[in-house]
Image (cartoon, rainbow, N blue to C red; front, side, top):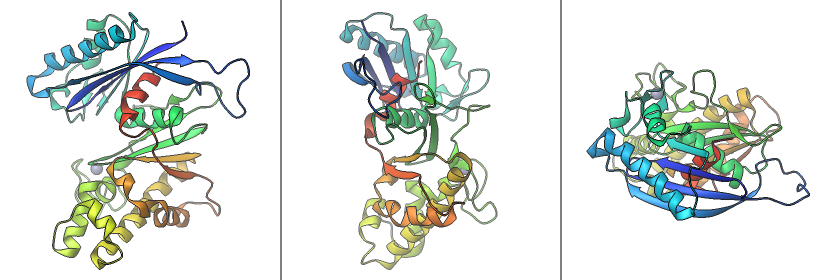
Length: 316
Ligand SMILES: [Zn+2]
């Protein structure tokens, strides 16, 4: 039987599982394709409520149940390649930190889950899973270096490298590679960030902060989608979007200058703001240290399912 992998996306409201089977491309490698670009068939898909209010042990139980049910529906047992995507990150001691499912914070979730399941599991945060799913199946297919950005309630990022092999998440020396949202662009006078600094990228590019910027200019609250739609008629909306695209360009220039990715793929609710793909890219062109910008900035293609697909692609 050809390669089978299972991904689990542990979210604040639901735990999702997926079982994928690789369909080989056949004898001849397609032009330009690399290992890991095969086609995948979905064998099973399972969803359960996280019910995080019921506490840590319950979340462990639900996660184990989702894996068991996914395997049962797929007609497979003890799959060796299991990946789990979750918000937050793991400390060197394997403790969860920065997860919005706060029952997990400070708990040895990885070792507890490995002990319960009796097999190794690969963990990554949701931004890394997003970048990996977009690289394998979505808008960044074929890229050597991908930077995946999630701009939603917070701002995160993940790096995927596919050089002489299957695409892999690059997690870095302390597991924070891609944590781009907390680079301070204006540490002296920028908006206060929950991390304790001021002027982090997140305070310019996350949905709640963009809406706050509009409120400060217009004196009335509007949702981001309405602000984006009103730019032709509302000067405050226009000013908010100009500020957004300028900061987007400055923020992504830090990524382009250091990582120089082939593709930057945008995800999260803010990725639906159209001006990012013209005025935003124009601002990036002005700030990046290059005369010709070859990096493609594109919208996600896998969408909301990127977390669970990306988790499935984590194990080698
Ligand atoms: Zn911050």
